[in-house]
Length: 358
Ligand code: SAM
Image (tube, rainbow, N blue to C red; front, side, top):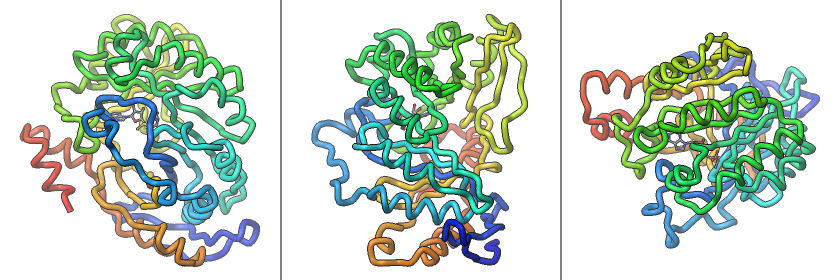
């Protein structure tokens, strides 16, 4: 329900205290895609067949400007968001991204706490940007890396980038003071699952939290199949056979990664079981696309256009009301529905379409 809409005098942000969706989930996190371009072509995300040389990316005028992003972010913050993650595409390809970090990191929640600004990157360009991102107020960094061998990395990212470039980026992040740095590895059976143990071995004891992600059926271009998913349970079994692990409590309600610690004190790992243990019931995330559409689920098919009213001169309270209205109607729980369906049928595509198509 939408509580009373007020104005936070200090920030001049319209605020409401009790916004929830139809499943009583509050709005807490905002992911902002700052570019639809990427310098890799990971086969499970932006396969070259669909994102080749002839692919038309958004023209510059379609992208939200930093000022527009910041303005919308203020509305989201007034509705309960206290964590913002910059993503993409590859966010480090967006020119002067540190400047956006600085603008967002200055925003406060209605309770007067600074908003936590984080970023997810493939780290190809991180070496030369880590320090300026830190100086701009970036709180945390996640790096995506799917294997340590150049051969596996090249095959998965469909690029000529050597793994060393990414590792250098991670080192630069550690030197800049990010602690811990999270490294996310998407595991695909038969492609990089033999890299699970080498990745664990490499990052143990080094101030890195390695997180293993179940390969997901996002979008419609990656030809996803359930038999290519290595489940979180299997990943944990493989790890635990080598390194005894102890489960750790979540940092906060709704944390997507299940946390485990090496029993010998060499740090922490996580598993993100998006497929086999869906976490829709605690999902508090909204997504803002590069061109300013609000999506309330990673698997949504349509978004609410915020850029048009923004550019047509809508006031802050009007934008806030639009966002609040959409959140109140939110009933997405795609992964839970898919999970229920996979136990009775293997016709993934049909089920996806009938549940979310339109
Ligand atoms: N370019 C940045 C990066 O590489 O981190 C940010 C965008 S990327 C889409 C964000 C994360 O989504 C990456 O960790 C990537 O591996 C993950 N991802 C993309 N497609 C996925 C899929 N089908 N299943 C699981 N994770 C996926």
